[in-house]
Amino acid sequence: MQEEMDVFQAIADPNRRKLLDLVATRERSVQDLAEHFDITLQGVSQHLQLLAAAGLVTRRKVGRFRYYRAQPKQLKRVHTWVSRYERFWTARLDRLGEYLKGKCDGA
Image (tube, rainbow, N blue to C red):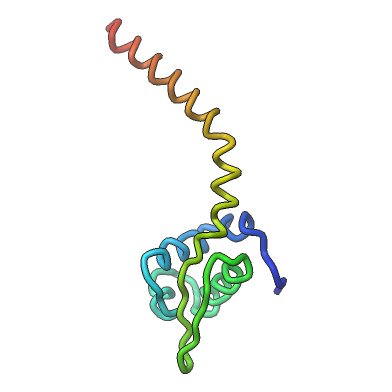
């Protein structure tokens, strides 16, 4: 497994995005997280390791259990990149709204 993973690669997988959603609200154990997936406990652990390598989660070990918590600071890179395109989508949505308003007003 690679030492560092790019945040964009990490969130490209739907299972990892779901894991992030689950740990965003509170710290959770691997066993708790695995209950939300149709993949093996080992598969969930591998996804969590990749998220940790990208700096998106932190892990804490208590006895033989591992607990994960979101570290959303790394998602700032994603937000910064996506925000460059917000202007594009806002303009398109504005035009769509104007078009629909014209259709409704003219009907």
